[in-house]
Structure formats: structure tokens, C-alpha cells
Length: 74
Ligand SMILES: [Zn+2]
Image (cartoon, rainbow, N blue to C red; front, side, top):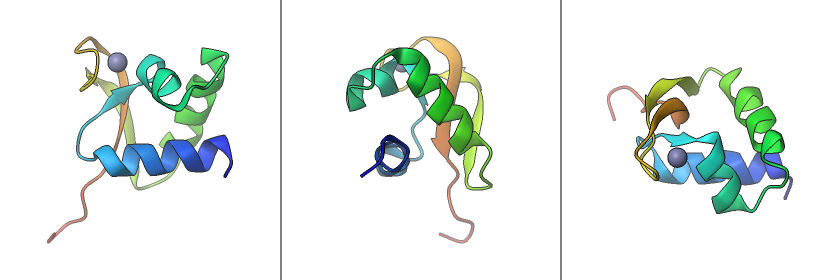
């Protein structure tokens, strides 16, 4: 799997929880962390992902986090 697929799967698996780039990098062992930032932004360009300032479910800090949007009527 590519790093992007890993990130997509991880974020989908934790939905509706949000995660910041730093924690995403740690969880997926992405180095350097800028790489996680890049992947996060790539996913944020998709309709089903939402990237904004919020509380990270892992570290608890308020920063840029990404989450997968919940399907409506689900
Ligand atoms: Zn975090």
C-alpha cells in the first residue's frame, strides 16, 4: 500500500474522530513529518475528507486536523 492509502485507511478507521498531522505521522510511522502533512492535504482535497482547525483525538491539541466525513443517513 502507498502512504496515501495507509493514511486514508487509518483516518477512515478512526472516523468521526479527527487526527492531526503529527499524530498521523506517528501512527503510520511516516517520516519526515512533512510527508504526513502533504498526504493530509492531499486527502483534504477529496470530498469525503474534512481538514480544519479542531481538537486532535490522539494528542488533544487544537490544531489542523483531518477527519473523514460521516455518511448522511448513516
Ligand atoms: Zn495529534
